[in-house]
Image (cartoon, rainbow, N blue to C red):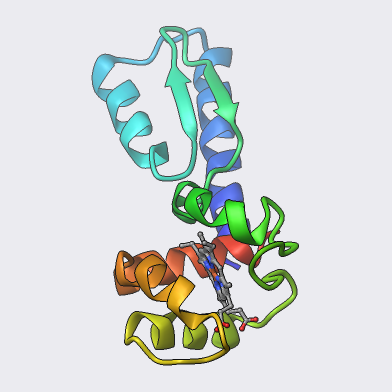
Length: 136
Ligand code: HEC
């Protein structure tokens, strides 16, 4: 949901700057900064002098970087490995598991592997990671 909405906002901003470019009115520094600030959470962008947006990466959710430490055991696509597959599991399920590990609860025989992992995550981190896993 949030993922698509961000895409729309990004598309809208690109459309907007496209118009500015059409009128051949360069963006002011204030406008460039404003756009950069608004886009920062969504993607890695570079707002150039003529109102052209160079989108280096269309979409990067905050959970993506945080998931990097999980790939060794759960796979880059959440397909599993040393740890179980995460892809295809529900939002509630994943949130529940991570909160249980964070609280030091035993879920399966290898829960101790997850205690340290989850203890390093804030509730916000957990939410962002789960939102990212859902896109895999
Ligand atoms: C050292 C390997 C390792 C790393 C790194 C790791 N995990 Fe795990 N993970 C496991 C193992 C093993 C289990 C199964 C634990 C058990 O028996 O309860 C597990 C279980 C889980 C589960 C529950 C899956 C299920 O089907 O019940 C979730 C969700 C999870 N991990 C998410 C993460 C996230 C998110 C990260 C990164 C922050 C992460 N893991 C990092 C090994 C790892």
